[in-house]
Amino acid sequence: LGTFFRKKLVSAEELARILDDESLQLLPTLHSSLEEDYYADTRLASCHTLEALLLVIGRGLTDDQKRAVYPELLKRLDDSDDKVRIQTCATLEAFVTCLGPDYDDTNTGYLLKGVLIHMDDTNPHVQEAVCLMVEKLAAVKPHVTRSCLHEVRDQHRGVGYVDRILGIL
Image 1 (cartoon, rainbow, N blue to C red):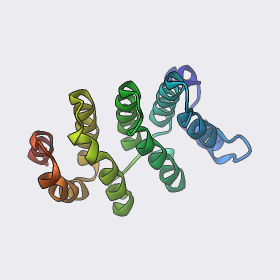
Image 2: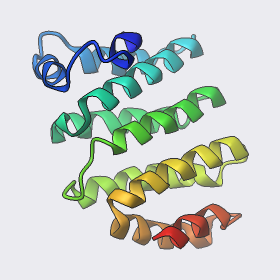
Image 3: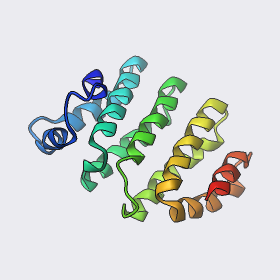
């Protein structure tokens, strides 16, 4: 399925119709596979697939679909496998391409609050992946990003990543 999306074998319009058809259950099926308890490879593949889907659909993702997708991805940032966590950040970067400047500030704030804690992770690779994702979001929603960064700055052990993003705003 991921290859199908990556090769752009479906248009954004066709994909929007598929996602709107509740009988097909595409997003719920992907969300379910993100929750796979035993096999990290399944969670990783689900992240790759969702990333490819998001890149195809872009701004065609509805607000309801956006509200359904990002909480599921935030859960994966707590995954026991760092590869899944890093890929989740790439998937969240793809999610950001679905947002416009008019996207709801409240949901953007919820997304940032769920992500920013991981920018202070013990794994520097996770920190960098989160930082790259927040940089992409900052380009779309600078005011919300700035506000959330100021809120967490004093709570982080290291402020380098926070300051790096604030420096581009």
